[in-house]
Length: 256
Image (cartoon, rainbow, N blue to C red):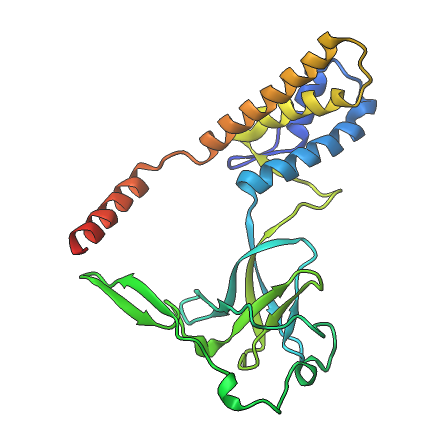
């Protein structure tokens, strides 16, 4: 009996269905699981990877190690009293030198330069206040005094500005799957995973005829078509959201 969690099904289900369809024995399951895992990685990056939210401690040198399964961030900030993440601004001026050194702060500061060089930029945002368009100084749900950050992917850390005074950082990020775990895919992607198995299970087998080569290309085409349909079914147009977007667009048009 297939295991389903809401709209998610076990990765085992499309593997088993493909094995039954192709009349394959159980000894090929290990190979097919790894092929399906590659499909999970490819399809997930395009469509359905969940965003994790973690609270990470700040080290003494104002860096935060990234999680092992980190791919890319969506938010970096701190919490307010409503449980919302107050995002920090990204600061590309921060250097990534000495990021792994416990004495990073003293090594990246030059006290011989005049203090006027340490400028803080002014951030302006247009926003809708319910009646008209206006300008806000600072971040929409915070202000620059919280601090700023830069992602040092090479060293696997978040670099924080000197004025950051919190003991933690809230990180929302896209996580990559790890081999050997129990994984689920949205049920809308079941046929796409099976199509990927049909394609990649045969692509490395030596072929001697043009007919066999064309068959591989056909299976590749079938996968991308199944992928396109899966993405369309997974994130369809939501009528309430569309209505809200049109309403906000009309307000902006009238005010402009």
